[in-house]
Length: 101
Image (cartoon, rainbow, N blue to C red):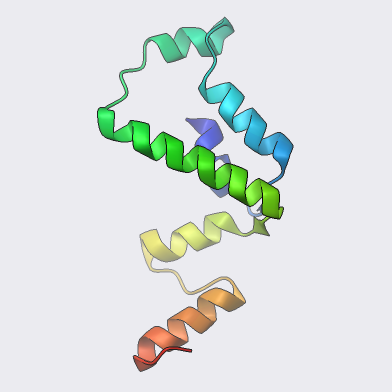
């Protein structure tokens, strides 16, 4: 699962086709140590959809070459940290006033 969460482990990550391909490759391995680990994982049915969403988002972000402070963005939602991007600040401001931007 490391490859799903790698973008939030670093301060800033740029998605690119190579990263997206590596995410898919590592999480669908059938040989080597990765394959051995994958064979012993019991993935709940609901996680299948989460996996597809993660692959889809990685592909979309790669196509956009999306670069950002993903860890800080996640921290906003998980820990209630202040916004770390201009878009986050605009969103927070509009939420506080109750009016759209």
